Image (tube, rainbow, N blue to C red; front, side, top):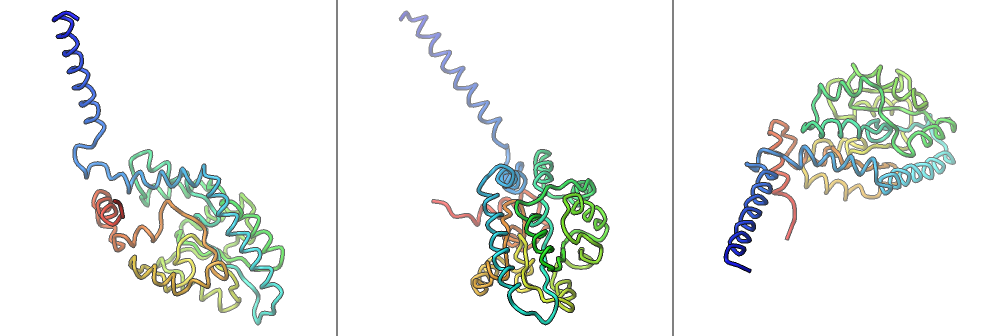
Length: 273
């Protein structure tokens, strides 16, 4: 190799190194607070799992298979009042992962306006196993009550979405939307006045009991441990990796924090090595 050739080779390496470094630098945020990846893009990864993972479907089928076994046992018993099932709607009966994808692809998390645009379409898919189970329960004479934190203004489109898939008892007197509070205990008590609630279905712990309502991270885990015998017995949990109180508890339900601030708070709480 001549001296000129060596010089050209060194120059080419320098140019290549500088080019790659510049490309890599451009791929990173200039500030760690610019791209709150966990808060904005994290739910997108959860939505990928909901839409594409056979394991997600298997968990949903497992939940509803357990529900059917428990319901058959309850139907063999006598009850002082008519037997009822209380179920959440979002990520329990209806699948809203398309909304999560839509928002994340626009570098946005949940917004009320975005959600209302989505729910107005009444186009959410079904959660695997939900429809067949609830139809079975209804065919056995069990009353179905939908307790949801969708608002009263969304009641019409929500019933439309449920009826599209032929969910049983999708009627105005069988749906309890949110009015003044997200806590569901008062609405469960209304059902309990006339019915015996045999089973509760949900993806969020507050779908089952007030003891889980807006509790901090450590207390939520303690209450799950204290009520362990109820899961798979009276409480049937559906998986939801996209959102829920599990996330809110990690920043003490203070949603005034910016996405970047919440991102930092989440990262600080993770274990690594």
